[in-house]
Length: 167
Image (cartoon, rainbow, N blue to C red; front, side, top):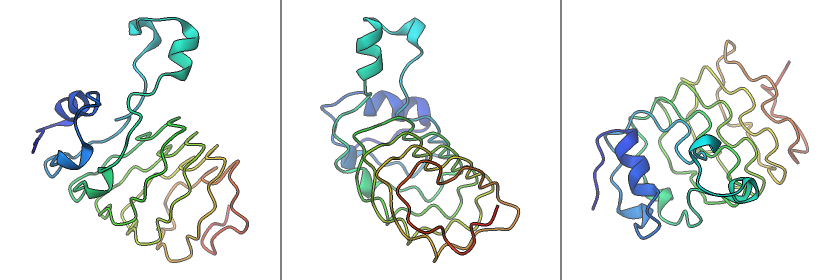
């Protein structure tokens, strides 16, 4: 079992594809923003086409077991991770304030998130934007009227917007 103290330590663990994500105790982590994001192109060793197709991780099995109860920032966590499609409906996101861009460009993501308590979230801008296959029900979510939800579902397959989604 691995127990990182911060996002930097967690990032180094997830970059190692030999480490099963279910063996990582994330209970101390408060910031998971941009966790699976690509490195800066200037720091990337390889061609531009290799950079465009690069994913920090190909196997996300076990991530559904993560303890997210202390996380406050998940901004851009799965940003442009096209192959991500794991059921993380049991995550405790009750302390998360920033969910903006979390699944932006996660083209294959289409899992339910109806169990999430997002009542403390303030930022949900573009949360699912360009998640092309995403089509789930969010009517159970309790969204604060001051929460930024601009373009939250832009370019998704959601047939009908939740009753609280009024712009």
